[in-house]
Length: 437
Image (cartoon, rainbow, N blue to C red; front, side):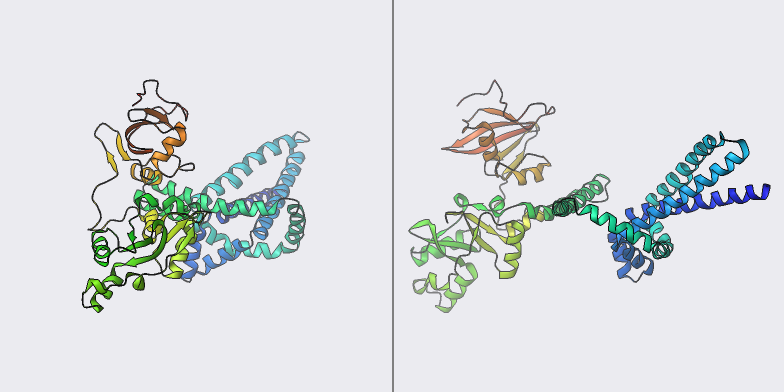
């Protein structure tokens, strides 16, 4: 009798160990870093390659783990109940249930799962050979389970699930970046650049373009000397050419092409034919995504495009540099103006030009002003106030205080913004003490 008791106890211990193996394997293989495994596989690590093979068929892996874990837990509980009943009678079922629950939870679930989470990569590579054998042995049963599961999943909206998974992947990457930034593993500037890459798919060229009111252009019918002078005074190497009215853009003039033409003419400006050296303008819809526009720039080997709306009216221009600045931040050279449009003050406020994009201000000050309804700070204030404010008026939106400093006709040219310590004021409220100009 004692030998049978010892055999049952040893069998229960062995089954608990198997249960711990299945629980730990499931946690390790689901928590393992796929990027790390991919890198190790590229370096020739066979265990990492085996892990990637297992992860390539998650249904088989999960099915085998769940089946094996259920079998050993049920069998261990049954043996414990049989042993306890033979020793103390029917009340032994209660003792067996309590004791087995404690043992399974502590030694077969919490302990192996905790270790697997702490050392997921190491654990995954350690259990991968045994898991491969388990999957092969249980393949007939797991194949039947997969058929049942797939039939049930056919009744779910799989297309929406796929779309959700795509979005979840981006959000997972973004969340990982933010988490590593908080922990100090990733520098804030590096995190902003990585986030900028992810944001490209959500932006349209209208969000980052230079508005037509700020475009530098040249009249194609002007005298050659005037065109040369304007090109030399300009801040850019490429300038659009227009005829009769600014919306009628007929070409783009490059400084290098201009210098080559002048050199060939013996530096005689009077012989210069501007339209012969100008390139054809490239027009793109304002709804084009920034990611698609970047790919188009690379494909066409171009660096500037003119943005038009649905009616064909020019709204502005976008350059390759504008897109790169969304990733790496402001790019300046020795010819750029040193005047900044965002000027932090010693009292905690920030003086901002009305044309400053909301995204640039958020990035520069680490703020979270919304940019869904407006592109610029002035546009945001006008949208929320539902009017064109006068100088001196003060508004409070989204936990920030906006004071209008200057206005030119219907445009807000300068504001003073102060983040509030309390953000209980809802969007659309404004200060009662606001002054009308």
